[in-house]
Amino acid sequence: LEVIRGVEPRVADAIGQEIADQRESLKLIASENYASPAVLLAMGNWLSDKYAEGTIGRRFYAGCRNVDTVESLAVEHARAIFGASHAYVQPHSGIDANLVAFWAVLSQRVESPALQRAQVRHVNDLSEQDWATLRRELGDQRMLGMSLDAGGHLTHGFRPNISGKMFDQRSYGTDPATGLLDYEALRKTAREFRPLIIVAGYSAYPRLVNFRIMREIADEVGATLMVDMAHFAGLVAGKVLTGDFDPVPHAQIVTTTTHKSLRGPRGGMVLCDAELAEHVDRGCPMVLGGPLPHVMAAKAVALAEARQIDFHAYAQRIVDNAKALAEGLLRRGARLVTGGTDNHLVLLDVSGYGLTGRQAESALLDSGVVTNRNAIPQDPNGAWYTSGIRIGTPALTTRGLGAAEMDEIADLIDTVLQRTEPATAASGKPSKAQHLLDEAVSTQVARRAADL
Ligand code: PLP
Image (tube, rainbow, N blue to C red):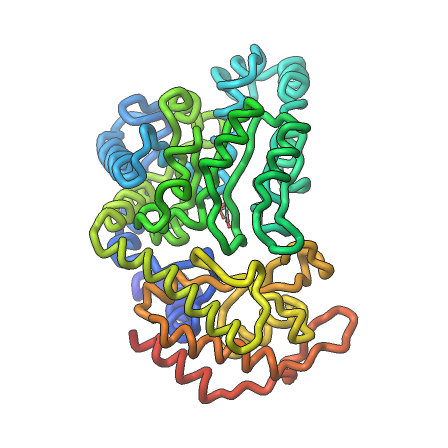
């Protein structure tokens, strides 16, 4: 930090403050974690300075032997840990990984001379006519993904996202009575809609998905099954999700982020079967420019960590902790979407406390509990205010917290929300003074987390 301070002290201060914030608060955002020092160091070094467009051994730049080494290692670990026939570790983020996957499936499945031309030429060299043909040839392809309010992600066909514009899109949701995925309703929609791609996976669904059934449905309607396992990749790597719940043997293509439950650097990755490999490897130049060699090095380190035996225990503890948290909340009378959890997250319906998700998020933050508001199925408050709070256990499990602390955290969350007065303003903005937190409980739990 002193080196940074010598150049721009405000950046050094922000980094220092971030470390303090992350130590002192209870990080319960389901998509966050604490990467190890080895991962962080692999990311902050001279590999960052290298350009390496292309694939391993076939680069458009000279001097890439060290990038080849780290990318090959990341691929080797990814294939081994997930049992995938092919891995592409260049995507800079989860969104990039999904874009690479969409284009790979389009280029594999759709006969489009314009797309082929687009893949071998720079986008600037495509004529207006090529673009027009491309739009016509690809424009009517269909995608079926999980709706945002049921727990899907923006990239699964949400209209304002590029995925909702690239494809003629339809969503599947959950059973309004149970909050659970309704496979028969999904099958019916797929039969009617006949999508090219079915996207499975989620950001805010607290249960398991049966990927064997999803593949059966995809096969029946001639769709490619794509699974976005960004949230639960750590549970797959840790062999907590196996059989029907492991997406890799069932889906033709699987995408993930590397920074959530997998506990690596910020980044994305695509796994696929042999038939899709050549299409996926065209991620650069189709969607990506130069890869981030320092991040690929950190992915290799994180994946090597995830192959170690104690990662299994870590992944199991994530789920045990989420269950303990859910039970603690239920025991105190809270309402959880689907009535509980089978994975790393709990979706708390805060309408029972007379609050919006935004109010609850803010009240908890003031108490050192960092969560995020999240829509619940058929949310009457929409995606901005919401009626839910998403709570995840990967980060605090990394800090070493267990079931007993989860019960204390459930008590803290319930106490804060019970004592938060619903805002009267139409904006729903809670005033800071609206909740009376039992500070002793808050600081006690936070301090314990900081000590670990
Ligand atoms: N896919 C899912 C299921 C996600 O939950 C997220 C992020 O929250 C992403 C993709 C996007 O990842 P990123 O933020 O790295 O682009």
